[in-house]
Image (tube, rainbow, N blue to C red; front, top):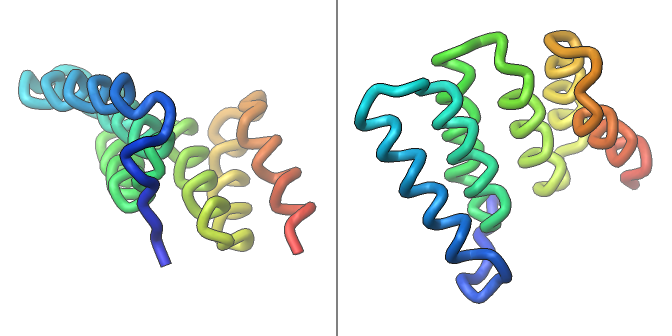
Length: 114
């Protein structure tokens, strides 16, 4: 089940402001994949995994080769305890960008999960 963090978490205001900024970019049709990727990470840091997942998927629709969006989907899945799904996303990210250290760390976390 997807969970949403409480509003009182540290950094909530700056991440929320970042989401607003990225949404403005989308309205202006400016670099949609990058804007969705930014929304995805901001929502992830806020603990809003539903919004993060949707934004990362939108980023991949705009640019199917955006490795960091696959990486983000992996972290969302991992946070939800879906290690098999997370590993698939991390591996896809690494296939697109072999030096993506964050995806490597994600795979390591999957290997440590019970």
